[in-house]
Image 1 (cartoon, rainbow, N blue to C red):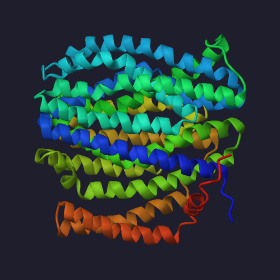
Image 2 (image 1 turned 90 degrees about the horizontal axis):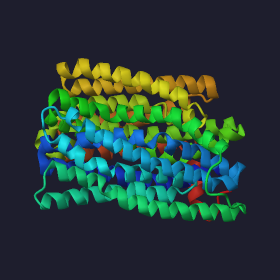
Image 3 (image 1 turned 90 degrees about the vertical axis):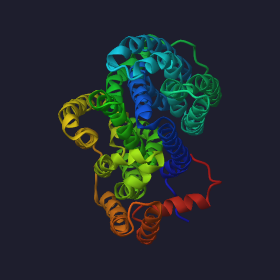
Length: 503
């Protein structure tokens, strides 16, 4: 019987659980936007999505890179110094509350500036800002649980519980006759509960780790450990802020330049695009700690193997989603209301850009876990600069389609820089015949059926289902034939030997 490498087993098992959570999170996020659109219309949904955008960017400031530092540091401490896990966790968590408090005050001060037309955005920001301290604690605690190996905790709380509560709370707010402000508050309300639950779970995980290693650590970090945390976190904090700016700034800028209705249309399109990132996101959660551990041990060949395998899986699963979104954008967006179909052209641009970006897989995780957080920050700064200029130039001329083009261009530059640096500085090859073969299989299976069905049958769910079924049939034949090239035999072998423990 074929022996499955331990890292492949770990990625497959952790990835399966994480994929389920990411899929649920994407579904809940889509449902949240759909409920917003149905209840508040494009203009009201635009106000709420602008609040989500501003809050997310502000939260990245409060996180200060400590979440990524947790994922990078804690797996290494488990191998190097088990007695330092407790003080490291404390040193990661306590600053987040006070940073969140400071950022909340800043957000309240900036609220009038972000809402010059008094559309209701400023009022909603003032109400939601004071949830920032507990949101920061919850976010860092999630990352700590991930760094300690708690994928199930991360998924259960971060990908299932919190996203599930949001659409339910919006429905309750709508039933009470509330407007955009209370709907925005509904989005942040799960954070306090999550922070309390995660604090208890993280404490239990630390005690379990100390029992396993036989080392009980002190409570507070010494100077060396504190410097180790912040020397990684501070450069990473810049990149984290810039990442969130890249993800959300376009929604805010579209709202300022074109109004809340345009922000609602564009925000809905960008949230739909997030559905294609389910597997990429779930695999990143699993492989980032593996990359850190393997790179720390100098096992570059295993990093290359896991990176290539994970990227192939991302191309096989994500590319078909983006092909279907590009071909049937109007049908998908109509779920939120007929007025949202005006975002279909932007959805086509975003989907095409994402296919190109995903060819590089989780290259950002490799760059970060190799310790090059400073280079990642510079990459993000360049990309944000391109995005800002593109938004200011293209949105007044082309509206939300211009915003989509500017965002894709900036993301491609960021990804290209990271791919070049990983190849030169780390030694991991980006791309390769296996990855391009996976992309070719997905495109070849779905592009033809999607274009033919949308042209002959039209923009409808029946047309989408027909094209999806035909494409899936072609995809299954191709993937089955090439299963060894895509490492799927290892996964099947894993499913037959689930009782075997992970070393």
